[in-house]
Image 1 (tube, rainbow, N blue to C red):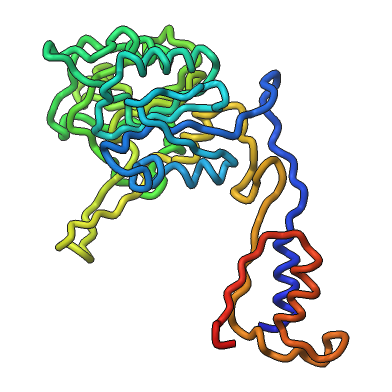
Image 2 (cartoon, rainbow, N blue to C red; image 1 turned 180 degrees about the horizontal axis):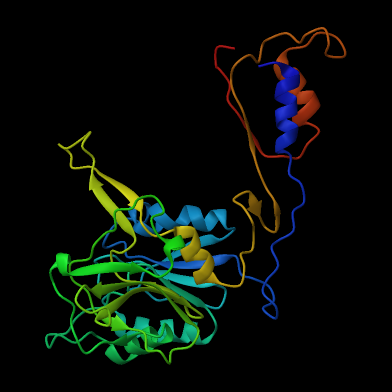
Length: 322
């Protein structure tokens, strides 16, 4: 690479002060941390849905995601902007302790994001463990259990996207849910916006709410976010391609509400942050005549003109033979 071109590209990467986005009026400082609830008994953290699908968008918005196990002693929720619970098929063992902790966090103003519903154990009588607290949490989203069921046949129901800008993000194929709890949002519910609902084709008043956003955060019906399709390029190992049906950016922005602490992924500790990497090619090349001073190796120029002058994180790839 031409040295002057390389140096110009490096200068473009230099960090410039960039203020944080302003919090909502009266809100004060916005916490940069989000607590993710995921169970290592279901899947390792690095393979969890939280890590695979939401950690990168959260980082891009300037948040840091911490993890907690719902069956272990729970951390202090006060430092966190929001709590995200994504347990997939795992049903926590300590629901009777977990749900009051979650309610207390909501009382303290911590946002709650439930992209996959809230999975709790079911008693032998068919009732959920901690049902009273569970209903209180769902009530914060304006949700109330309906006194009817929807048709089981997919051909007899349809999805109604009341916020079409929030759907068909990576695919138009919606991940139809075969079985689900039927919730409604009463007309008297305040501060709640229904994003989507599942309606009976015979009567649209017979419907189930499948996604809502509001002052409490965001709630979505289980398995209503992602569309999985078998990758025909590798049918032997049954690999699946995954696409977002719901727009994750809108879910996080509106679920977190009140602004984000940083506008992009390069922000760290309140100021613009970045790093550079120098490729291994050409460190022993001689400088061209238009570079001031006696002829030097390219790596010497980089050392004298950049690395010694700027306190900036940089990784360097070197070829051992050179």
